[in-house]
Amino acid sequence: MSLWLLLAVNSVTLGGLLFLLSAGFSLIFGLMRIPNLTHGSFFMLGAYLGASFLALGLNLWLAALASAAAMAVIGGGIERLLLRRLVGQELAQVLVTLGLSFMIADFCLMQWGGDPIPIDTPAGLRGALPILIITFPTYRLVIVIIAVVVAAALWVMLERTRLGAMIRAGVDDAPMARVTGIRVSRLFTIVFCLGAALAGFAGVIGGPILSVYPGLDADMLPLALIVVILGGTGSLLGALLGSFIIGFLYNFGQALFPELAYIILFLPMLLILLVRPQGLFGRHAP
Amino acid sequence: MTRWVALALALLALVTVPLWIVNGYYVNIVSQILIYAVLALGLNVLVGYAGLVSLGHAGLFGVACYAAAWLVAGGWGHLPAALLALGVIIATSAVFAVLSLRATGIGFLMITLAIGQILWGLAYRWIGLTGGDNGINVPSRPAPFGLSLALSRPFYFFVLIVFLAAVAAMAVFIRSPFGASLKGTRDQPRRMTALGYNVWLIRFLAFLFSGFWSGVAGLLFCYYNQFVSPNVLALSSSAEALLMVISGGTGTLLGPIAGATLVVIMKNVASAYIERWNFLLGAIFVAIVIFMPEGLVPGSVRLWRWSWSLLRRPRAGAALRVGGGRTG
Image 1 (cartoon, each protein chain N blue to C red):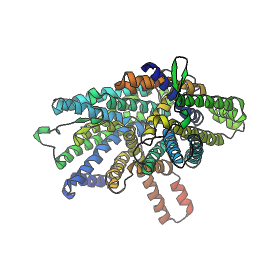
Image 2 (cartoon, helix red, strand yellow; image 1 turned 90 degrees about the vertical axis):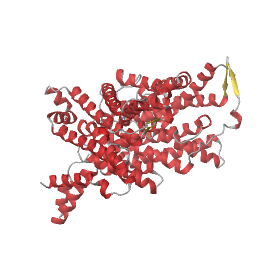
Image 3 (tube, chains in turn blue, cyan; image 1 turned 30 degrees about the vertical axis):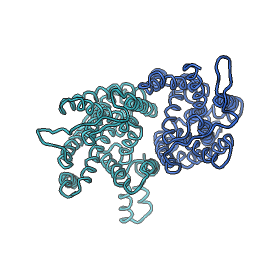
């Protein structure tokens, strides 16, 4: 397989993982109006928890679900106990999430040490499948499928259920949603739990590709941030499209211009912030 | 009157530091505190007086650091290198400001974060220019008027002079009409516009002023460490600088200095005993934002007045009245 196809396959896989990470980030940002700077930490902590569950003998999928559940509890706790105290003070909330990200990073280092922890690909998915002209590694294909399924499920949840309608109302105009009797503060907790769970889940299933290492949080958070700025906050379609754009930019940028890889990543974000602050599909500027 | 006495005492204490601190290591720590205090004072212009929270100031600090280190390592003299580095930092601040002042609030914070990360990525990856992870070594410290700064004590006095200049500049700045108009743009940007002030220009100039002092701190750090690596520009460095400003108290002259003292002491002295500096940093950050949002200096003043009033008039009402002052 040529280098280009390999890069394209990697880009699509990274795009899928990024979507799982940034869908929750985008909803939190859209609803609560804050970039949750602990989101990369949720991804890393979830991955570490998953590695521990794997060491206990669970298989990868069970470990991913268990880790997602644990992250939902942790995320909900953070929202209820800390962010709730600072209602209406967005800057203070951002700073709290920043402080928490340092604490989680150091906690992981303390708990799991500084060496990268590899996560094995599940036994049945180690091969590769021929699809048209390319051979797609099976596990990477599974990740993309999961991302698409989660995207569809989230879409149905947001567009076709009562909860989804309430979340959309909150994203569009939180004070007005309150007036109509929607308990927006409860939505905050739900969305925060959901986002943390998705991030933790992505961390575990991304493990076989990325492995788990200190600094994973700092690698993923900026990517999620760029995706959401690019796609627009609170927009699922924006997060999906942004994830794949950034997946491609990241992999091709690293391969073609390694010295300027970060500029290639951050330049589109900067351009969007300057020219179209609400993002490609967002309804309002951050 | 007590104010001037306190100021004179503080100045006396600072000048005599090398006399009563025997160990050169601790003199270096005080130098570090003063260097970071200059950075925090610079950042405070934006955070405290302009109401713009920047998460990219380590970028400006680092650019000055790298510019000076690169020039000196390339064989330039210290004086032209320092002057050129200051020119570079003003130009960088201007670009930084033009890009980030498109927004305020969270948007401003994110743009500065993005630019900070770009600068970090450049330092880390543009190996031809910056040496990547290996950083740049600075062969020597400058020797103004032939006085060597190689030892910790002479260097301390050099840093002290720059620090006092920074404090004086801030004091003048805050009391100037320009400082008043900057505070106006923080509190009532629309009214300021209606009054005919150019809010954007005021913020832009404040950003240049802030960037300049951050760059000066970067220069000092470059001479202090005689080594620059991408770590200087990392997000955690920006967060540390912000913590200094917020913990000390935004929008006060003394606050950033107290904050820098706290953070540097915790980082150097405490990390000799506790292994987990970043955990502590995060925990303090969270605690201060939640419990003492106005910062340590105003917060302690509030607690002091409150307990004083309790002593004089032990009634709950008095405590409530005095304690119900400004909250962040």
